[in-house]
Length: 300
Length: 229
Ligand SMILES: Nc1ncnc2c1ncn2[C@@H]1O[C@H](COP(=O)(O)OP(=O)(O)OP(=O)(O)O)[C@@H](O)[C@H]1O
Ligand SMILES: [Mg+2]
Image (cartoon, rainbow over all chains, first blue to last red):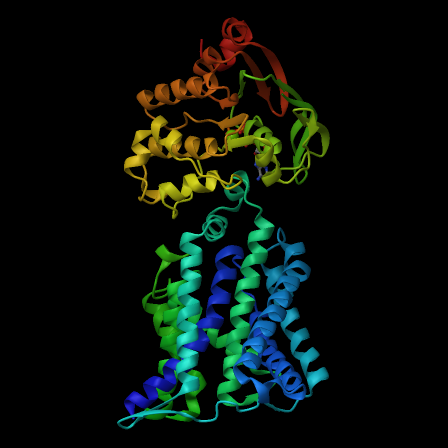
């Protein structure tokens, strides 16, 4: 029972972690809470349904399922990254020198717009995501893990590690950290700030697309409002871990997933969504900078 | 090499530069002196493209660079060591230097390590953990990483012990001898003028005096106001 909930919690937590990374990166660079980020995740899920339906119609899913899935992932990532890129250019860039509240309000506006846009075009009811994986998996003693869970946990781990390596080792990644620490100085060494900010949105949105697709596969249902709750939780995860830090987003996400899953089965499932915030309040009281503290802030 | 013609720069409604003319010739060291708030840093930030001049033009090697984005100006060969050094505190020393070479395809650390051996020993350390003098060396090293034709230095001696100050001034002289033109902002007017081919005195956004370094050093007006005599 405990181990089972651990696996479920890790699965959920991996998804939170992927979304949290996007919040954290954007906050690290712009000190902006990108409220539209949850909607990018929701769009990822919808785009997945649309592309899969297309690949089913042309017979690719029946013929070669792995290829169809891979293409679905790639296309959703590309589309979501373009959305993220465009949103920054339209809604945030013009406000870069405005008071800090302005881009925040703009972000809320984008979020509401995207929700309504999807509700109008896709309908307000749940959409079903085709269950290609089913419940196939493996049993170890009394614990069951589906292949899909394994896939979610592994992909999220690989992407997080890749992102960390990118930020630590590559020229662009180092420039990203430089921009997070001092934008004027970054300009003075010849870094094009706009390029780096765009890159941040592109990467964050791509990760959100992957998260959206994986959750859609996991639960099998998608709704225009899923971005709202997931967004708030991932944001909680980012703050939990110490916003601005990659490690923080990952551990914050996993911790949140575990708390929800264990709390849901040992205390009560009805308060599932409340546990996240209880933990957040406790951590912020004890360690206001988040688990990975201020020292890690702006490390992206 | 660099010419500022009638530059006006504003911070909102505040006019910080009120029509400045400065000329820096290839191979020279030119110093810009003046009291706190005179507009020295504003001048350098305007040259670097961080601030946009409202009027006037800036010509570098025959090309107008006023209004160009800062990264393009670095690519053209102008590099700045800003006031307060602005080391990236959570990048290592090596990473700070690599960022200095951001516009270049190749990162060549050897020359900088030769100039400042202490940076080589500490290359894995975070920039924020260096002492003031070491940070100044790192800031100069970082600015040199892009192989600039023109180096802008904003108060490199600020807050440093006298021994370090004379080392920094000697280094500036060496860098200049290697062919880098220098525009030096200083409050330490005497030391700066001794080093310079030419000097400008800035007062509340206007150039009030200009001339050869040695001429300014014996100028009565300047002696009273800036050389403490
Ligand atoms: N960000 C800013 N916003 C508004 N006014 C500013 C800003 N920065 C500088 N100023 C004003 O512009 C004028 C020139 O400032 P600047 O920093 O260029 O002086 P400085 O000669 O470099 O002085 P210091 O020797 O103290 O460094 C000052 O009156 C200053 O108050
Ligand atoms: Mg200054």
